[in-house]
Amino acid sequence: MYHYKDCGLDNIWLVNGYSTLDDEEFGECVSIADTRGLHKAIAHDLVFNKPSLTGKEFRFLRKELDLSQKALSDLLGNDEQAVARWEKSGKVPKWADRLLRVCVIEFYGEKTGVRELIARIRDIDERKQERKLFKDDAAGWKKAA
Image (tube, rainbow, N blue to C red; front, side, top):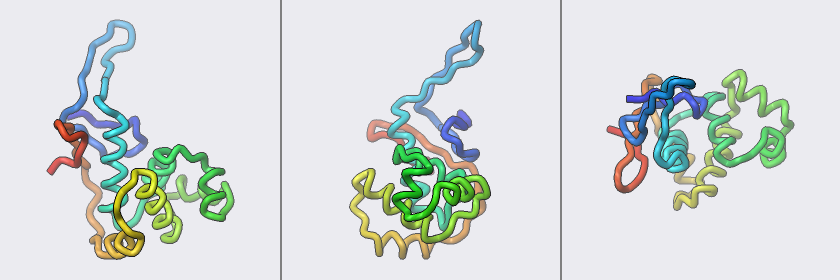
């Protein structure tokens, strides 16, 4: 397994879908198949399986939307410093958490309504943060069982 830290999250592990190469000059190099697909799978897991987003998870989703802190703050009707503070402190207001999830769903073209998403988030139990395993197969990246 490979501990995938380059996404900015601490608990992402890849079961497969990567290869390694030992380079004399740079050491071990890792190549990940379909990084965009992997990030989409991680985003989907965060949106639909996390009761509340941490600052790092909020930052990951913002970057997936290719938004700067300023652009997201404009979208949310807030100031850039607030977004920076949420990402750094990890204390994301529920309204911002939920609105960002809606933006991610729209970005990826998911067929989930806002009410359904909010109800789903409300029903998620707080779970102990554990390693998140992802695997790549013929259908693309998915959360491993």
